[in-house]
Length: 130
Image (cartoon, rainbow, N blue to C red; front, side, top):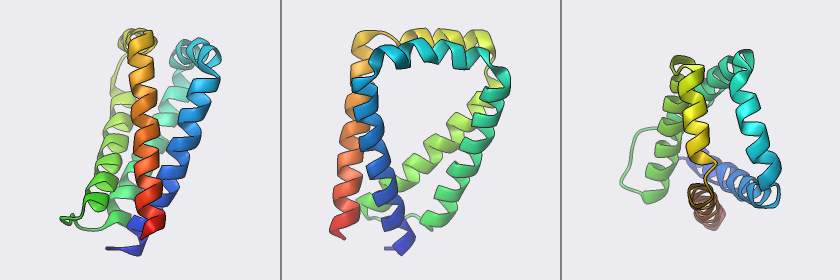
């Protein structure tokens, strides 16, 4: 397995754990902030461009697909990041508001936070255990 894949797993794992805790602790602030960010089109454009760069960096740095689960998970994170970045540049502000309204629902929010935390725990464990 590539050393960079392990590094990406460690980095993303710790990031997702920290993000998940922040999403739990600051839920109200996050929910108030989300619609305001969507209204700021220069921010959306910049964030989309950064996500495209990060997604491409993950995919290129991860190297070719292998049968190892960690490499596949890191590659999927790269693809999701890349696709989300492209979508941020293509989706209209109105559609973005509808998506944010969906994510602000309690069950959806907590499922997303649980996925972020579980993914972070898996990546950190797998990355640091290697």
